Length: 260
Image (cartoon, rainbow, N blue to C red; front, side):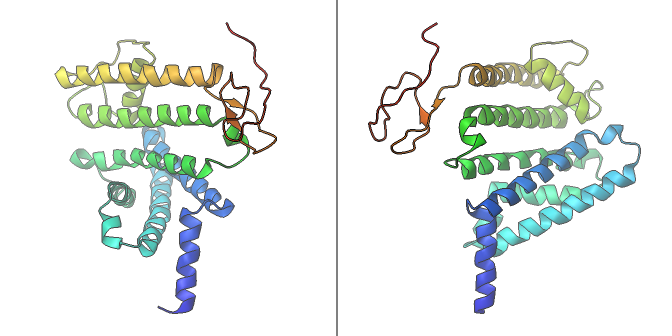
């Protein structure tokens, strides 16, 4: 391998995996592309121009294939990388995007693309420790991501397990509608899951979904940490009742509303 190739490989690795501004922006763009690919599938039933939808799916397929190939190229152990769970999910998503006319028993391949939002956690790890809006609202962002990931994954499970045997769930929107109605305990009752496994799934959505929803509300109304930059060491996250910085011991004065 020439020196020029090594340099290009190092630049690619830095662009994909580092905490540089360029890397964060690229991963943000890929994250937006992931959500766009997911919503193409979610909204597919309401689109009248299928050619546009299929063309966009192929576009995202090419984009993700380039990203996937780059990650294989820079991987220290390529075989191990290929068989990692997230890499296998990425490969299935790419296949689903290049096979836009998949239907019937293979419909689950298109549903799996929702698992790409798990990459959101990688973006969060990259943003940790960086100053700015994310640091001040880290708990809220993390709670929103947790809830969003849960909703999409549970919707996937509802769709895959019910679409062929439940006449009330015809497309992904039906599954998403049921998941949100169950999670919020609205329970309109117009869509229900069939069988014991369906009932167990509904229970899981209610129990874990409400927990995540309450955590999100709590993080908005009363975050666990206060944002206050220590003038000495720069630590920006402290307990609400802290009088000294736990990192350097400097006296800090966090504005509070007092005990309720």
